[in-house]
Length: 140
Image (cartoon, rainbow, N blue to C red; front, side, top):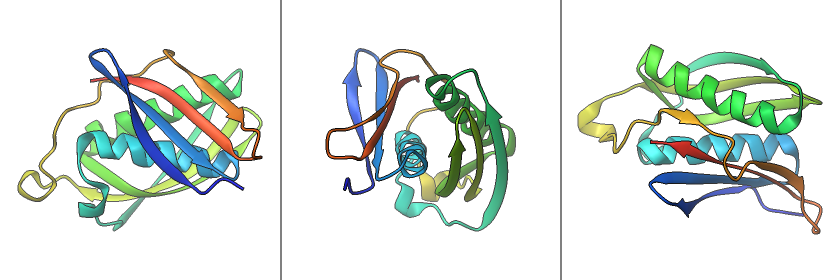
């Protein structure tokens, strides 16, 4: 079984995100953590305030893009960063709670602003070991 984790990968001037987990839910939660890590160190973010999110799309890959763009929107609109995610993917629908806090520039030291998730390098797949991978590139 795949251990839940996240990572970045190189992609020209943008940033590739990858989340892995034992289920699609875990993979989607881990890629959300990778998104936070583009902006700030997730360990600096307190999981104080919950924000509920819902998305649906025509397929699970489009759902991943919609999920990340919903988080990008919430980060900008609420001026928050998130460090904990509970995600439930059912087909091409998603329900989630993201916990975070208001951005404090001195403590969070935001590195860049993520503009949007893209369809570049987009994949949601089951791996040979039975785990799941969710990946795409974000425009920064």
